[in-house]
View (cartoon, rainbow, N blue to C red):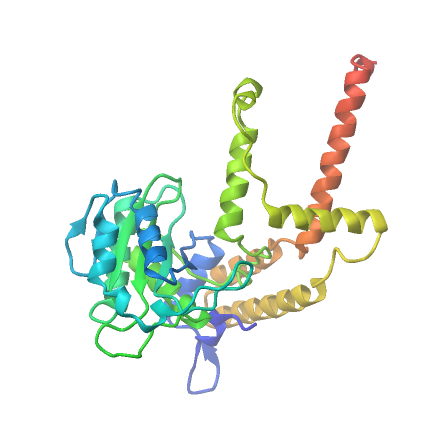
Length: 347
């Protein structure tokens, strides 16, 4: 993949690549590990019931205000149904397509997109909401109906944004969200956060040297519940029901354990492609450092080179899980040894 920062550079009269003020600021933010914004599509309702259920969930069953594109906030148990009625979702053509049979994939077009705009812990929630309001207005006002709600019940403040898929005034025109659009939205939201006085950045994870892909919301929530349960005192855990495990992660761990038992070389599947991507990223960053030196930005060029050196090693998820499992096994073995020989380590 090409490093966006490099590709955005401009060539001067001599044909030499040069960075403008904006590109240099972007590089400073990236190598300085400025907090990254998160903009993602978390799903979407394919019938009126699904859209209403999601609005009810994000409004915490009427306890939180739902702000709409028409301005006034709506609160109360009946607000989600009122919004669905106002959006006339029952008139959308896709609304009446038959539901899939159990076990089949639902291929009905969405009636609404569920979008999340999030910032790291410690970000003032009011500023996240202010930036989200501008984001929604600039992208959807007078085109697609939308509703927003701010959540502060988790360390990272975030705004849920529900957007109707069908255009309000052009029948047949729908909102399709592509990867490129998501990238542009991240950059836009980061800029809006900076306008609020909050340091924010938006770069692809590969450019930052990040290897792991983010988990899906359902998996993340399940793992978070399991970790919270594990941190409880034994007496408190005894009186509670253990959260369900993630079937996805359980299957993934099972595959890792089978690979360890059979000694099949499947833990590093995909590593070669990851290494090629890393090589391209490093080459682009080095090109950026060279360009900065030619422009007299020596200190920033050195920071870029240190940034390259500190990138984590390339490692597949399978290999990472295997190493963590081995470490846990060694720790458990040591604990059993200590229990059997309580005075052994004092000899």
